[in-house]
Amino acid sequence: MEEVEQFFTCPYCLEEISMLLDPNVEGSQSYIEDCEVCCQPIQISFESEDGEILNFMAVEA
Image (cartoon, rainbow, N blue to C red; front, side, top):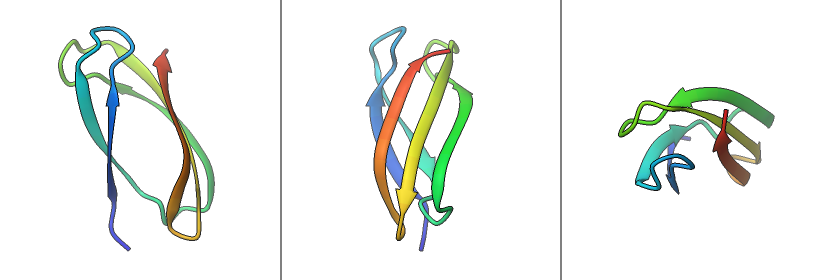
């Protein structure tokens, strides 16, 4: 399976941005990624199972 594009709103500048996620890694993943618009750090967390994203969260880091 390929990566999935996830759209969300930056918690800082409120712009809609997207990021590629790999749903093939089972379980929970969490990391920090900078917003492509305002460059602020965003804590990205998501859970995947059977190649699908189950939960996704993007909050201030």
